[in-house]
Length: 594
Image (cartoon, rainbow, N blue to C red):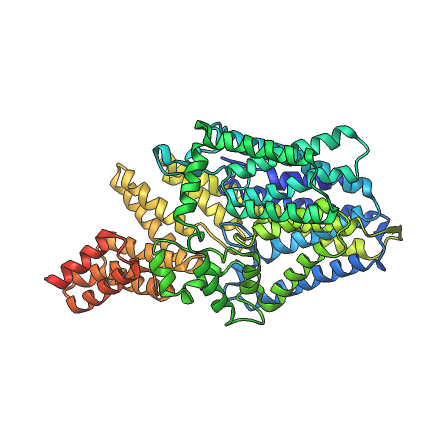
């Protein structure tokens, strides 16, 4: 059973399926989580061993997990978009069902590993091996070799100022770096549990490689987390700095400095230049302030998981909108603020309690330090499936190491586990199949095959779970396809289908302001001024401080001879844009001078 746990954790961290799934770095991880949790639940239900309920750590951990499930259910029930809160948005698929599955997996880890240090050792070995694979992949990505992903997807800038931020298998560099932090500290943790010198040495080597890969991502939050974890590690172990340790640290600093100033370190130097130009992390400070203001309006239940993108524009300050006019915020980029906005004070308090468990009786320095490092790093980013899974699973390992177990008779738990497991497996199959159909749709569109794309997308619509949809992407892709079609009949068919998808997206998209804006553009391409104005005003209502709908509306009103209204909208667009786009300023200038 411990082997299945180790494989599950490794797969959730490592699996990506380019070509087979549309969201190839999100869907397969979610599918593995759901399916493996279902299988483990049945296996555990049939097992005779159970943790000792009298153990305070186990009892507290179980209670917190249960309360979190209740909080998620309440927040989802009161959500403005229940379907989205239930199964999650496209960008991370972290709805209440998925978060609930992570909580269940964490509980199963305790049940499986309680009283069995040998099983904890197996799980840590699995994490170490997964860390070795992921870190190696991230390093070769930095050096320009990537057999799976296009390198342009994680490059920023041009020439000598090009920044390379390897995402590994986690979709984005910051998530990858946070995940690697845990590996850095968990590898050496094997020493306390291992009876094999080979595994001891491997854990240390993997920790060094993971730290190097993390550094190459150029993630400031992770570097801060690494420092915090090291402080905790040394404090718990009460390690005194010896001459040998100082020499090793000095050698590491010299090696990193030599790499940094070599030709190979150019992308990192470019990233450092970015740090100097943007020391406060872009929009984060203003985003946190506005997120707190948003949370204050729903303190008891929160707005519901995964609805931040749709709801935040109503609370975004003019200051933030002007500073980053072309940016859509999908989360508060802070795990505590994310919980506060999504689940209100209950969710925020529960997350604090989980984090607090990492500090209570810190008998396992590596595990505690890894948790602290991850917590610090995630003050600047949000949970995703692999990072949340790692946090809760490692916390569960900490609980398991201090929880005894004893044989118990099988109870009604078996009957209760079966339908839950069946539901999880069903969701996994359906999610995978729907996303595969979406990948087939994309392939057909790339091949300019409208018939195949329509058939695949129709199947996707039948299979998809409630929540985030691809209607907005599909509409825009069909409009692009129409421009490539040689046949006028095919072109008209593609445009008609694009219109249907665009109108549908206004009800299903996780970012309704984008959907309404896209519909306005669609009507504009048909010279339907009334439809375009109506959609544009709906986009403004959904995102009052976004400059683009105001700018487009100004042009629509000018074409209809409503000059005074056009001027007002053009001035508003210029103000919200902060003067950053020449075209917007030009439109206002023309209206004010003519």
